[in-house]
Length: 195
Image (cartoon, rainbow, N blue to C red; front, side, top):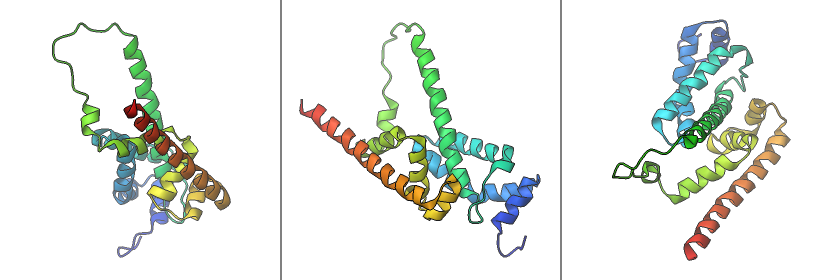
């Protein structure tokens, strides 16, 4: 690699061959974007850090499966971020379900404050996150790549392994669903408050 410019495809080729310093350079280059996507979905910096670490662990572990799109592994990393978070969310849901089956402890005086509600940025942000979480995984992926990360349609198509036309139609449907879910949630909240 030249010292003046960074050739990501070349660095990834070296990383695939087991060069940890090339992998470290790619980690340094993309960790903030991966962390940002994880934080948008999880809203907790510690959980987002864990997810970021898991994404790069997956990239290292599955080096032969990583797709380079227009000279970059970022699209693959972002889709993997969504997958890792879906897996974490399912795991957390199973854990909560298991805890719910346990007998309730006796009350001990003060009740815990709902920390999530006080940390949340507001009702609108919560509605958007809830609506995003309700989308099917492939809609979440296309929204992440095309809207949140603003990748060109061709790069998103390459990352998802589908034609550009498919990305366009998925993006259109996903935006419509996200809008409907967001408005539906807001309308439900308004109706509930009017009662």
